Length: 114
Image (cartoon, rainbow, N blue to C red; front, side, top):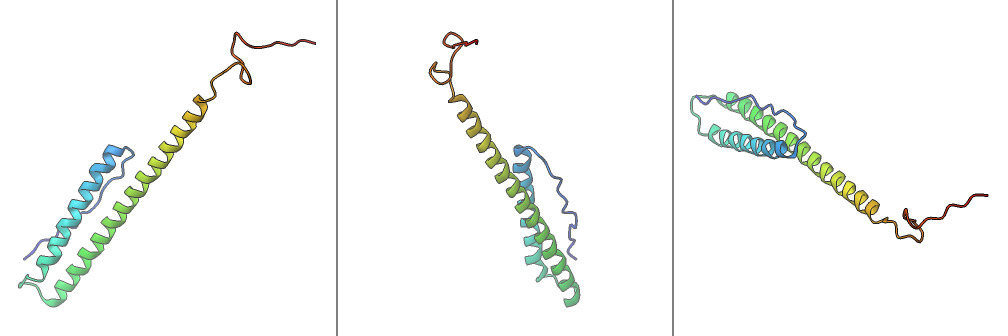
């Protein structure tokens, strides 16, 4: 009889290194479940009804893992966009170097008192 691992929980992480390992872990779990799904048709100890139930359960686990994978990828994309926006903001701020004409330096500024 084939045993099916029903624990497919993966905790969410905020670091990019953690999400990479999560992605690999989820992909590995999906692969294992797909292999179980393929080997289910060769199982002779189960009735057709039991096979159908297990197939449905495995497919729902695969769908759940794929949803988690999509969520992690979306978070990675969002972090990449935020990082890109932060670097653009930093670049635009550093380009406003005081040149003494429109943005005076300490040695090249005019104080006017009336």
